[in-house]
Length: 95
Image (cartoon, rainbow, N blue to C red; front, side, top):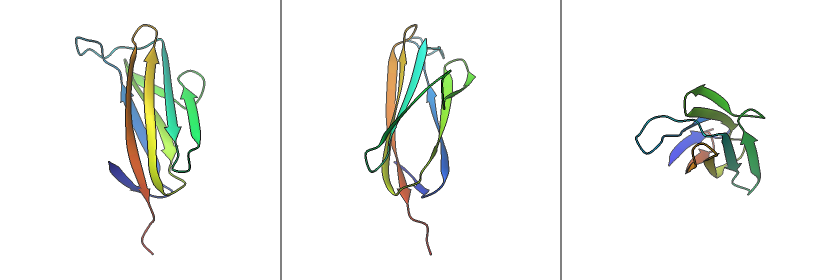
């Protein structure tokens, strides 16, 4: 798990690939973030907060405004059904 200083903005990238290992675009791409206090935020490509940088490659920026473990999940549906998830840790800055 990667650790970052609380208050930093972190870019989280999701890459979708087919069975042959080729980058592929799902019809719909959703990114969900869970803060350490349990607040869930949902972002959807083409609607809010998710940017596409190339075929099958998307990112979303998160501001780690509270300390603790953040979890996230990428989900693709439609033309390609796939999902991936991970965690980040936000730690207090040294005085």
